[in-house]
Length: 343
Image (cartoon, rainbow, N blue to C red):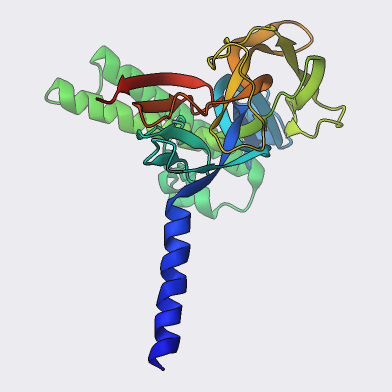
């Protein structure tokens, strides 16, 4: 029994030591997080909308409809693990490596230093909606109990005109019962305006407004002249890229053919199979978001998939130096590297 228990403990400790001496990590693939903020207005006709022109001299829509418009578009860098660039770094005796810093999805951030992961903007939170008005709360018993829509429309219109007359009398100081001070006047005018607005809903209908954030993760892989990113319709909002009811919005990707220099010793080549630390040498890219009329947003950035990779083995992590390395969280390139000679 004791031998079995000791064997189990020995195996467990062996696995723990092995995992502590190596780290399997990804290099990041640079993506873009595109936020499209869309406003949706929904119209519902009022119960008495057919009488709006007759009693209020106002033409209103008789059918429900939705209307969408884009109010903002934003682009920020985003990182995903590159499944084609997975490496295992080992804390071998010949290397002065004591720790690895990784993100939750195993993207390498630093060696012998605590790296900082990507930071993204907070998701959009719409403002609280005001409580909808209930016009029936402001109607007399006579109006509520009438069985004729025409009669109800006439009485509601009269009520609206009476409220407007009361507002005019108050603002001119001609009301029979004037408030004692400015605060009371303000409260009375506000209450009367609320009543008028609520009753007008019977004729004019109700418009509700919602703001929706749509998130698109786009990974540029190569140069693109015009790739449809999404389509947008004022009648339906965001639609599928093959839905011709929507206006196309394009992704344009330009490879600027620029990347940082190698930092290993000149002429030294490392095999991809040897133990070492692999980092990105990201290439510069220009991304544009456009529609058929104009360019809306342009962003220049460094992307790992438009560059190359390099092995940072000896002499950067030899026993003679203490090297700390921080990598860019979005493209895997070197953000900061410091080496101190060990005496």
